Image 1 (tube, rainbow, N blue to C red):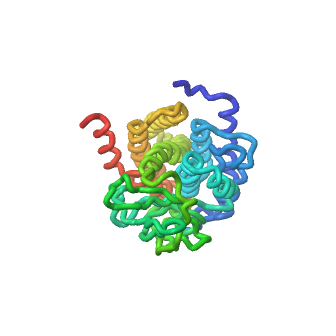
Image 2 (cartoon, rainbow, N blue to C red):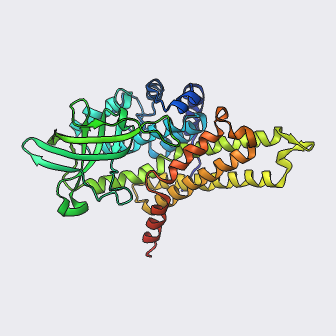
Image 3 (cartoon, rainbow, N blue to C red):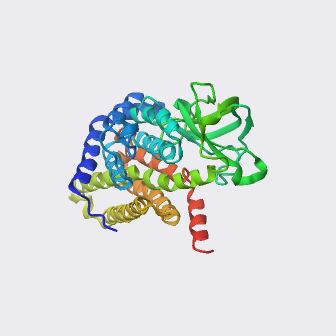
Length: 383
């Protein structure tokens, strides 16, 4: 593995940082307080090229295509520059759990129908897997796709869908035959404009408030066969592969946020004086900041390793689980340390430090809980 970045790759990261710092922080305190999603910021990100990461020019309308390592580096820069963790999370969710599976598993007709709109920001895509009774046991699905002349009728409900309330289309996993277990799980690209699903209201939550979460309801609308992604029964394979990419790339922006937290903590520890000296001279404060740096560097190496493995076309199930577990828990711990280091200022909403902590907690749950990551790691180690 060689993580010696080229000058061009570093320019991409730095450009993403400068763009996000300049363009993706408007009204963040008010939007967080009111749980408001900004389509304008979504469009700005699309014009910069975030939603077209990994897409070839024929679908993105851009001249170049980024590989997974460069895409991760760009998302890292985005998270460092933007105070809107929810928006960065939402962008990653569409890029890596909707657009990428369509690119990898879709037909040419499906790619040309859906990918240009997702890349331009005209369409918003959601990934719909979890259900009221299927969370950690992700493939114990009750949403059914019954084959009928011309396609499938979907019946069921998806829960905790990132971008669900504003989605124009959803990558939906349903079973064509409950008796077949996970081998009946099948993926569909389901369109809202054709009344294939009904979106529930945005649900209020602890953090990540600037990205809407909600339920999707499927009430028997006919989804044409040409909207099926891959063959019947391929849903598990599609989801498993996209999950490795998701656990890698959806956390890259959090790594950038951890870097921003560290920079702010060091600046504050140097400037804030108590008892006649900077608080960074106090052992307890210095130790917290040292721990923040250690978590950051360890998480960075895990992230880059998973991205490198995926660029090589290799499986990274164990490494992705290790990354998801370590980075998400490190983000929470470093967010707590940032609040402690800033003291009373860190507790104020206007400063955004406490918001990072609230946003970080979600990482312990989405894309597989910490408990499930430990279970996966243990299983892959033969236990």
